[in-house]
Image 1 (cartoon, rainbow over the protein chains, first blue to last red):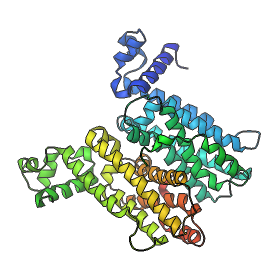
Image 2 (cartoon, rainbow over the protein chains, first blue to last red; image 1 turned 30 degrees about the vertical axis):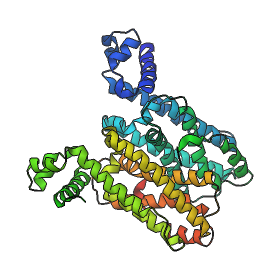
Image 3 (tube, rainbow over the protein chains, first blue to last red; image 1 turned 90 degrees about the vertical axis):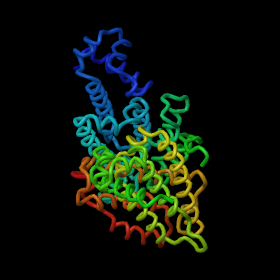
Image 4 (cartoon, chains in turn red, purple; image 1 turned 120 degrees about the horizontal axis):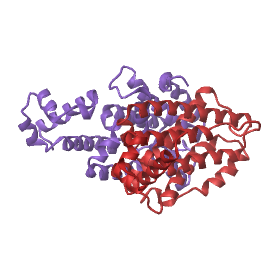
Length: 221
Length: 221
């Protein structure tokens, strides 16, 4: 269990990284924001990489917790939207991590190794969810290979979403429209998923999909 | 038209960057490999970023050339495979660029700006190809919004493919299995496209899709 001070450092760092970009925030900034001496911060974390690693572990724990098939009941079509909301809310809450992931992975071998294992767990998690949806007769029946390639495509779309938005809308942090732009990611995943649903769920979700549409995602297209 | 020496520098740099990773290759390495003085190299390029930028412009020109609807004839289902082969062969030929794209964009504002315009052109290009496939009654009829979200998903899958392979199979450059792993990207895009094709093209492409499958893409899943 992390100490209360450690927890405060993690939360403040996450806020600062999200608001200003990780590269623009030093451990001295973080300490100053917490009215804490740098020495006290270094008592809890060796360096900034150590803080980033702990933030990733929190993110990972969150995803590992929600990316599960419901226990003791059948999976429903509403669950699919709950997963997607959780995924894209998570991207937003930990946006500095996803805006700059390759840079962070390049600087920390342990983080890269954990991220690799995390990727495999997530793809397996999505495969289990698809299989549960098949058993509930919501998703059309898939072979193991089809299930795998679908889970992998979901992973590719989700994990490229922040990078795409960065390309499209600049590196400027925390603009007003960002939460809407991120939500459009749900639209994109549904665009991929909906054709594989059976009726009446297909029509139902196609309708709900519209609520996630953000017109300015591709300016001028 | 680039001079012959300039062209040699570009080609040699591309080879070295692909084989050893851009970060491990200096302008001095490049000059030495060409039996050229560093001064002569600097006569043609101000610095390494300048070489990288020129390599990107070559890549861009290649993509802009093939990502077009055929002129003077109807588009055929075989064209779809030609496009995908070209896309993933291009990822392979310019692999250093795609393995480390965010890092390169972070270091060169002009490259980032060009890449943004390139992204928009590519999404528009894929939309035109989808529309042509609709007119040839190969692809099911789409609204403008549906065509856009499909083109964007293709872009997200393709441009995340090298990053995914880097996560999965390590940063080690040029392993034997790499070309096969990259080709599996065609499989992933087809997995997304095939459900929207009409019969008999759907069955035809589903069969051809198998030829692009690489089993080891997700080790242990």
